[in-house]
Length: 285
Image (cartoon, rainbow, N blue to C red; front, top):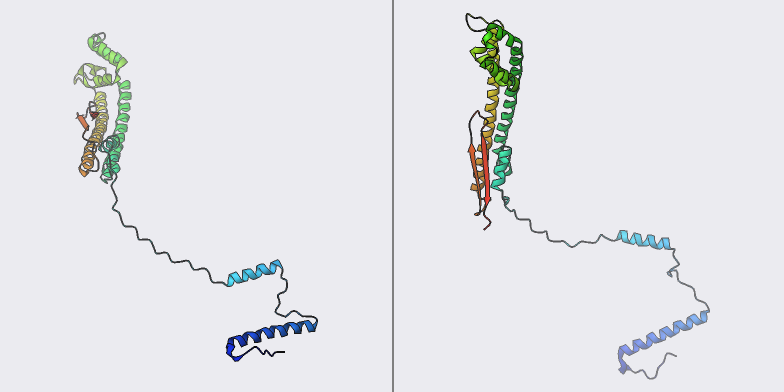
């Protein structure tokens, strides 16, 4: 059965092995046919439910090592850039200091602004203190004068006073300008006889001297309040000019070749006639 008269030794080992494998397969097929029935091996797979398959997949996934993310070379550290100073407007810094001394310095990044702000605060505290004291004394001496000085007493001391030029002037002041009225009855000798306790021998009255002292106190307090305002005004001007110089000297910004900023100042200490004129001109062509 296994003999083959055509095989010769000249075919070599390779041909012999192929023939033996062919006959081995043939023998296996015949053995199955004669057995009549075949049985599945214990290694055959049985049917699995969906839940079992999912659990198996999850177990496999958990057992696998985490994926390795390829290392990304760190980006180069950012180079330090020197802070570029923001351009500041000299005109704006100047006007800010005119409104609130020190605000222009702080806008330009200069700590000197805190000094000017402190002076501004001290100015207003001083002004309010002396102004309130002066007004309080003013109310005091006016009430005292209303009680101690009287037109009828003045007329009684000298009937010629009634209808005189001094009488007309004083009545006009009393009706239209109380400040001058209270000033004249305390200062001018022509009205001294209208004070209570007037002594013709000395030409004066104790009540008038007391009144005049209180009035002087009021005037001194109000004068100190005006001094504070003058100091605040000077603080504004000095701080405005200073910040203008600082910003322009830094070279951070300038008004341009076609723009000019000028200011004129008129100051009269202890007077209400103080003024500052600011002119900003720009040439369009």
